[in-house]
Every structure is written in structure tokens, then in C-alpha cells.
Image (cartoon, rainbow, N blue to C red; front, side, top):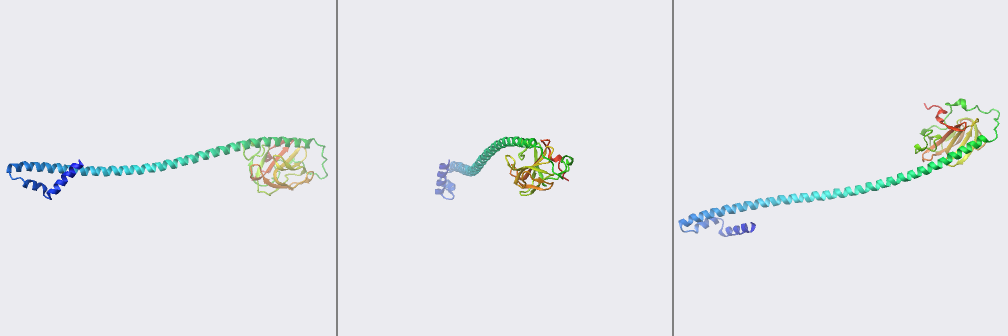
Length: 278
């Protein structure tokens, strides 16, 4: 189509601006003029149609090229989006794998701590049993009142928020032992005896950090664990409110105090013995 049209245009150019008219003027015979006129009209119509078709095809080609360019741009954008999605998916997979690894480590650590705490509780029970089985301790003159009448009225060893309650045990990630409570207090806070008694133990104790045990008589004890430092000596007499140590950090790593009470040698909920918080 295009070569033929180009050839036709070249011929018309050679004939000049009035090419079709000149073709008619070259005919001398009237009969031949009519025939030439019809031929010239047909040629003009064919040439016009060819030019229009060519223009239309050029427009179609331009439109197709624009569509292709748009599709190429869309494809490049989709490729960028796909690459970004791939990178995000890889990061998410890596984060998930890291989280799973952390959970596994925490699970292993929790199991290890639970085993250690169980052993520590057994050892503590044996220690308290040994204290109960010792020679009877004569009450000195002017000894303090028994602790039992003061149930629900004892002063707190330190003022603070309760982090774990009695009986929580392994159900709480913060719990040191299911036999006591944990109180959030700043490191170095003085810890006070809740009632008069005698220091039955003071020093490091596996699973309880620095531990002070105060014997209140009649198989009743108060225990102050995870101390930053003990400030009482074994065998020393303490009165209600005396400082027995300074707060440290509980096993979960938070600043605080572990507090436990034993009555008749058995753990009891300390909140039933301490004053109610307003």
C-alpha cells in the first residue's frame, strides 16, 4: 500500500500542482477526453482513498505505540511492586522465624526456671521443716505478741504494686514461686519486718536470691526474698517495721520484692494477712 501510494505521489508531483488537469489537456480528441476524464476521476478517488487510509493507519500506529508504552510502564511498575512485595515477604518470614526462635528459647528458659524453682521450693520447705524441728526456743521476756491475732492487720513489707499473686506459679511469667507474692518497688527500697520475731535465716538462697526468714513463733514465718542486700543477721531479734534488707530485682528482671508467709509450716496467701490497700 505505502510503496504504491508513494509512487503515485511522485508521479503527481512530476505533473505539477494541477497534475490531473494537465493529464486532460494532453488529450486532443474529444472522445478520448471523456475517457481520460473518467480515468482521471477514478485515479483521483483511488489516490484520495489511499491517502486517507494511510493517514488512518498512521493514527492507529501512534495509538498502538502509546498503548504499548503505557503497558511497558505498567509492567515496570508491577515488577517494582512485585520486588517490593518479595522483599517484604522475606523480611516477614525472617521476623517470624526470629520470633519462633525467641519463643522456643523462652519456652526452654521457662522450663529450666520451673525446674530450678521446684527444687528451690523443696529446699526451702526442708529448711523451714528443719527450723521447726529444732530445739524449742524459749520466748524472751517482753517478747512480742503472737502474730495470729493480727491477721489482715499486718503492715506491708514495702508499699508497691502487686506483680504476681499467691498461687499463680508457672501460669505467670513474673512469678518466682506460687507460694508468695511479688511487689514492685524500686531497687534499694528498705524492706521491713511485718511483725516481731527472730531472724531464722539471712543470706543467699538458691532460687530466692538474698533471703531473710523471720520466725514469729508457733510455726509461723515471713520470708523476704530477691533482696538486693540482707540487713539482718541470723538469730537477731527484730521488731515490726525494722529493716531486714533492701529491695533488689525479682527473677523476671523487674525491681521488686518476693514476700511469702507460712502458717503451721504451710504457705498462705499473704494478702489475707496484710492490711487491705485503700
